Length: 185
Image (tube, rainbow, N blue to C red; front, side):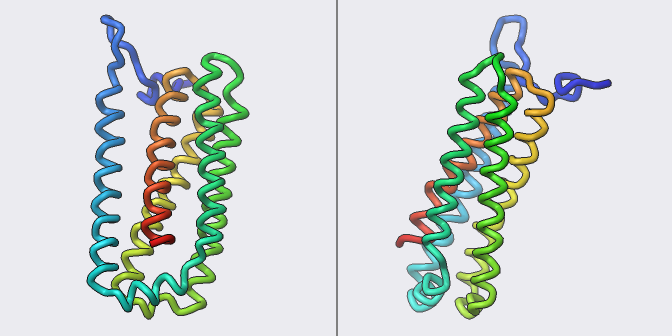
C-alpha cells in the first residue's frame, strides 16, 4: 500500500538538509494570498463605487455569525499549531479537532447563506455576487482543508503535519483580513 510519502504529500528533505518542497509550499501560500487579496481589493472598490449597494448588502449580513466563525477558525488554527508543536507525538487528536472546527465554520457559513438568501441579498446586485464569490471561495478552501486535515490525521507524518498547518494558517489569515473588510466596514 502506498504511503503519503509515496504519493508526494510529505515535505521531503534534500541531501543537503533543506526542505525540497518548501518553495512549492510558499508559492502556493503566496498565490492564494494574492488571489484573495485581489478579490478583497475588488470588494473594497465596489463598496466605494456603489455606496447604496454596499449599505443594502451589509443590511443583510450577519456579523454575529461571522464573529462566531472567526472564533471557530482561531480554535481550529490553535489545534493545527498544537499538532505541529507535538512533533512526533500524538498529533491525530488536534488534527481531527482542527478539521471539526473547520467543518463547524462551514456549517455556520451555510446557515448564514440560507438566511441571506431568504432575506433578499441578491438585491445588492454585483456586490452581492462578489460577496458570495469571495466568501464562497474561502468556504471551499475551509472544506477542502478540513478534508486534508483528516487525511493527514489518518496517516500522519511530520512533514505533512507542517504542510497542512501552514496552509491552514493561510486560510485563517485570509478570514482574519476578510472579516473586518466584509462585515465591519
